[in-house]
Image (cartoon, rainbow, N blue to C red):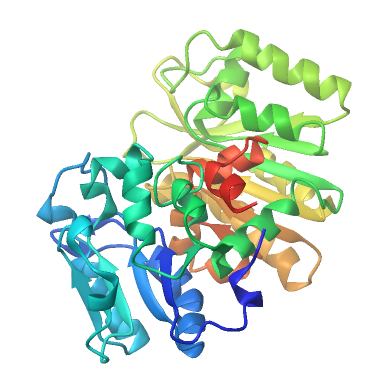
Amino acid sequence: MKYIKDQENLEGKIVLLRLDLNVPLKNGVITDETRINKILPIINFLIKKKSKILIISHIGRPKGRINNDLSLKPICKNLESKTDQKIKLVKENIYKIKKDDLFKNSKYKIIFLENIRFYEEEENNDTNFSKNLAKLADIFVNDAFSCSHRAHATVSKITEFLPSFAGLQLETEISALKKVTTEIKKPVTCIIGGAKISTKIGLIKNLIPKFDNIVIVGAMANNILNYKGNPIGKSLKEDNCESIINEIFETAKKNLCSINYPEDVVVGKNMDDKAIIKELSEVSNDDLILDIGPKTIKKIRDIIERSETILWNGPAGYFENPNFANGCYEITKKIIEKNEKNQIYSIAGGGDTIAILNQMNAVGNFNFVSTAGGAFLEYLEGKDLPGIKALN
């Protein structure tokens, strides 16, 4: 893989830069700027190199149709204030744009093409569409790791028609994930939560042979508690997953990996209720399990204390209600404590996990926080990502 940071002669070159600026919008207002902040290094790098930057990105799923509610205009305005640069948004049809016209006005060093998913050819990985885009630039840079699990035109096909490089953020993401897949410092622990165990089975199976501890929390853990014969009341549970759980325990046994799950829980009668700590045997029929209990928190903190590498994906409880956020808070605090002593390499990923860290203003206290959802999980599952494969 070739990296843009190693390229010398970028002055005056038009760089077609694929970013993931799929930020949440509410009435045209950006409600979370995490993804925008993460792409500032590549923008500043290319400005310093005196390149002409042609940005392609998307918001939402317009399914190949123009949708003004999903315009990149708010992002352009946000990025103008962050970079102190004039930014132009080009809404003209891509097939009609001419390369020589793009940067005629010298006051623009950054130009956005409108939401690339307004074209159905993008998600169809269309060859002709990619060729037309390639005509607008001199080189291509993929700095959108979070889109790299998609076989889309501006992620994979485009690399056939332009010299192609990995961006700074993409390189950082892969380097971080290698720390929990191929360049692991042991003991290594994965804390994994979320709603459905079936969506994470590929990840769990791939990590068990490499990891010392897998800690299963959140709604996923309800399935294991139920499998082990414990009452879970009216808690969220996935049907027909007994064989999946059996496979997890069998695989872990063969690979000497410890599978950990709650030893006590925090319940409420509904999501807005107050927290009541209960032993597993005490959960009643009208209880909802919404967090891990103090014994479980102590056990997880002890596991983190013994670990040198940690991967966290998915919340320990219903953290949207502060009464059920203690598990998440205590896990975060223990990882930060170890990080401050340089005793652990910590990676967190997934939307809910990032939301917890943002609540605690703790994103900067982890070694790496990934904004990539599907790409993050698929890489950890050992799958080939089309965007990465295309750059190799």
